[in-house]
Image (cartoon, rainbow, N blue to C red):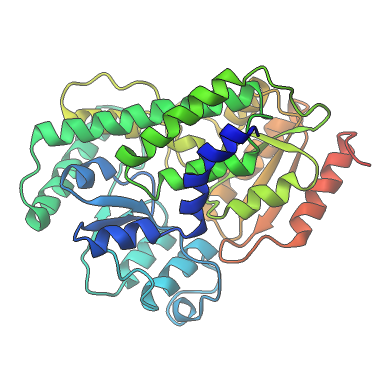
Length: 377
């Protein structure tokens, strides 16, 4: 990175150094904070009502308080989030917002304790068709009504302004991904991931003005030398709540050029919504995105889609960053792995725990994988 890029990266790195400092500061100043456990929850409605929406990532450490009530084979993200809640780590939240995606997170919502209300958003399991649109539109209206009971009326004008802000931010994030696909030497995968994670911990109205000058600078530096010889890696999986995972992968001697993660490109790689009504805009935006493995979208096949992503990014290989006991991702994984193999695209699967720092084994496994690509020492 150039000196100017390093300077522009400092605010994002600062946010990632203490995930919830921004939320605690907002709460101390009297602004309500809505904690989201899934990118399918309609942040725009809460933002329009004056809330600061932040993504809840759990914590890194023990999960004993959660293990008292949740089965040990539940995914580590769920266990770490529930432990943190029961330990008082989320005392800055005004409301906890879950999406009914998998059974484990539904259990966490049911077990959640504390003084703040819990809301559960519900998407149709089949994300296409008139019935799905009616169902999700009705659920958005239900959530809007619940938010208004807590925070007062949410006008269409305020909601439309919030939706447009989020759409503008998604467009800017797509530009970041496009620049790095063209030249991943502009930012390391770990640095790019700090931009991504910070965007989920800040108000989009504050993140976007920091992001735009970074993008302009990266665009000016687009012709900078690319780190020649480093294999280009696509990272796929579900949750990835620590920047250290990207650091550990790249220490093996590669560069992450793209991702298929729920806290990564799936939140931004969306077609432009065309509706005029703000709830319809939210509905189209969420239903048209590349789907999470927890949902079914007719015509969507995770295998060919991942092959297409790998080819479009000129990836030399794919690293599956698999959270242990993530059942929805585990269902998609064999199909995706086979399609990659059939297309001649190498892949490796590494199982990780979200509440633990990446083990040195992660770097070792990726390094061994890179040797099969002819990149070893």
